[in-house]
Image (tube, rainbow, N blue to C red; front, side, top):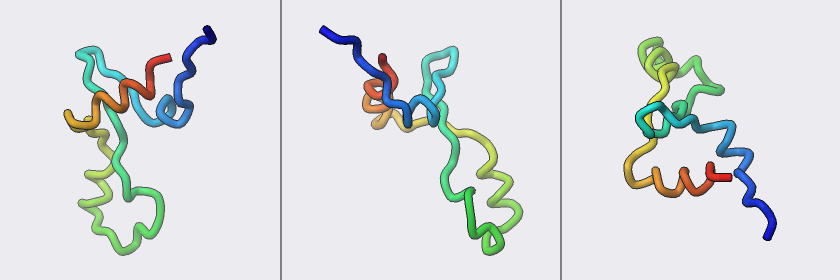
Length: 64
């Protein structure tokens, strides 16, 4: 049986932390930034965690 392949898109978007949580970057940061406030853009720079409900699906995409 062939090896399972990791989903390349997921590999680039998610990282697993040392405690096993999944880190992701925030959306709405790529374009049309002039209409967004300075505070909003600053907060979008920080990474956040994948929600508990989505963690299983993301792990399935990352296992390879």
